[in-house]
Image (cartoon, rainbow, N blue to C red; front, side, top):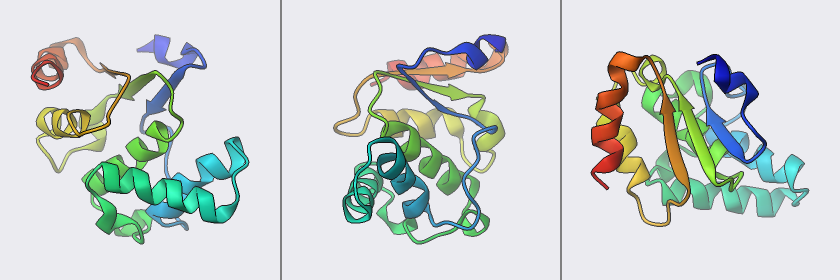
Length: 140
């Protein structure tokens, strides 16, 4: 897992050490990416963020702030923030530590199987958990 710290620029990442901003809603946390990295205006950034939540099937969490979210809602927000970068690879670092309220391999598999999900999804975790993800992501 030390290799995660040196991932190339074409990789988006979801991890515990990349937390949400607690004072912002899910929508605002996601909209920060196109706003500051792609220099879109606030209206377009918000539109893109809402579209990402819609795509993930979690439009209802848009107005929730981090302290008001369940772990699964927080994970979806972090995932949307990573996916909005539109990079070809997505790395999820130890999802069990973030998704302790869901059967997480199946939850991740359902998100990855949603329409319009592109790119390669990789999960970094302890070796004894790898078989769980192989089943969830290979069932697409």
